[in-house]
Every structure is written in structure tokens, then in C-alpha cells.
Image 1 (cartoon, helix red, strand yellow):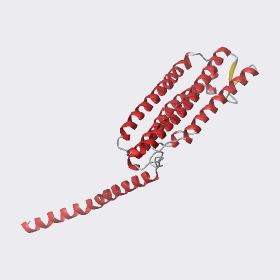
Image 2: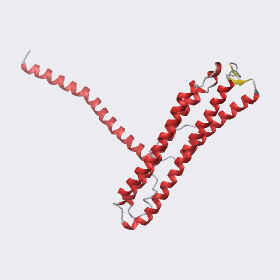
Image 3: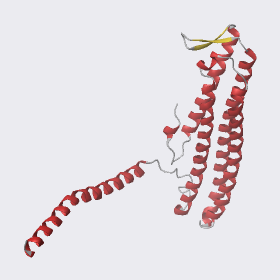
Image 4: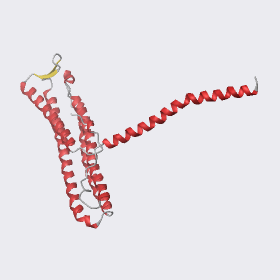
Length: 249
């Protein structure tokens, strides 16, 4: 084989290799650009942070930091609530009808109930700490704001913080009411002993005494109503940056 012929074969092989790889390279580059554009479109679709402070003062840019800081308080409340709903889900599972095919005992409920109450207390402490940190951060941001805006902000900030504190406590009270109601239901179930049974045909819990059946049904309805009110309360105050679909009705 001549030297020139070998060069022709090698050159042709390189050309084929380039031709085969070019489409995949082009596709990868196009895919990357497409992904970035999609991400930008998602960002634009996101709900904006409410302009609670920046629209009230001349130092707009600096005050936007306060908008973000205040929004983050509600994001934290939202995330704390998700932990409560996780415990609620477990507690609801424990009172599903099919579980009443055998006699129920307090130890079945004790662990999760204790953990749920501990979680609630910790969430309350966390909220107090979040408010404290937000107030400290406010002082730092305030330094970069024009003094002409101090009169407005020094009145508006504590008002909004107090509003958040009240709403956070209102939510915490609802969760406490849920756990208190659930404890009462557990005490009732344990006291009933063998006065209930599981109807396999209707897949429901039934009681030999109507009063027991009535109390059981009313208490579960109350629990579900509290859960509904909690979720409604949070969605009405949903901050920017959270996925509202994480809380389902």
C-alpha cells in the first residue's frame, strides 16, 4: 500500500468520526440552552416577594432586603407546619378503621403523640428565635437606609413583626388543639376496651353503644376540621418561595 493511499484512508476515517460526533455535540449544546431558558421562565413565573416595606420609603433597594427578611419568617412558619402535618398523617393512619380489628392499646399511640408534641414545642421555640434574629437583622439593614425613612420603618417593622407573631401563635394553637383532641380520642378508645368492632362489609368501626359511636365520629370530624382550618390558614398567608401544592386539602 502506497504512503499516499494510507494518508487518504486515515483522513477519511477522521472525517467520518467528526461527522458522527457533531450531531450529538450540537444536541447537547442545544439541550443545555433550552434547559437554561426553561429555568428562567420558571423563575419569572414564581410569585414575587410582597413589597411590604420597599414601597413605603425612598430607600427602595435597601428596603427590599426587609421585604425578603419578612417573607422568610413566613417561609419558616410554612416549613414548621409541614413537620406538624407529617405527624398528623401518622396519627391519622393509627385510627384507620382496619386497625380496630384487634383491641387497641395506649402504647400504639404514645410514641408518635409524644414526638408530635415535642415537635410542636420546638417549632414554637424556633419561631421565637426566628423573630429575634429578624429583629437583629433589621438593625443591620437599617444602617444602610436613609435617615429620612427611619420614622416610617421604625413604626412599620414592629407592627409587621407583631402581626407575624400573632399569626404564628394562632397557627400553633390550632396544632395544639389537634393534639389535645387526639389525646382525648385515644383515652376514649382505650377506655372502651371491647365495646367496638370492625365491620368488614362496610369497612367501618362500629360501637355496641350509640353514644360511643357518636363520640368517636364527632371527634374524628373535629380533627379533620382542625387540619382543614390549618391548611386554609397557611395557604391564605403563603409566602413567596414555597410550593403551595405541598399542602393538600
